Length: 150
Image (cartoon, rainbow, N blue to C red; front, side, top):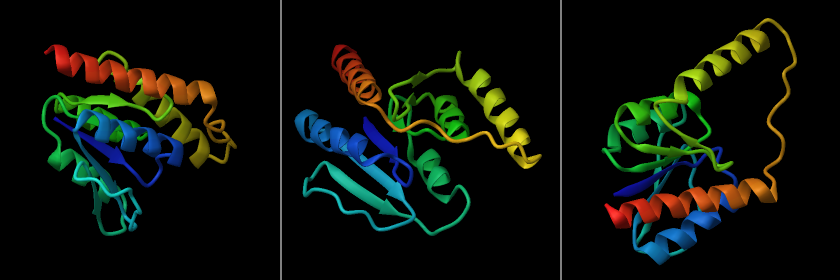
């Protein structure tokens, strides 16, 4: 099993948690981005640099994931595609997205896009908090434990 990170928008602190976890658990971690990333040296940490373009990194992740992999993303359409391929999804804020929750998230995302395109200022997400980091680390540990018990 592999961890795939939508790395262009993933906060640095979350990447650092993932680097430590990949080394500790000896599991492959791929960071997919449209820019060159600097990562710590490790046989378990790799980067994939894709061309710039709309959804190029997302498409690369979807094309490479297999059932049981873990995808780290805040991108709801990418999360939906990953769930459809039976991958696990955790947002950088520590929310596990599932087939039961993704439809509602897609609906909210589409509504927000419609509001923004009509000129409504919706604002962005709040800064990543310490609680978000802790929730992410807990969800990641749950995924590792489920993997070990399978």
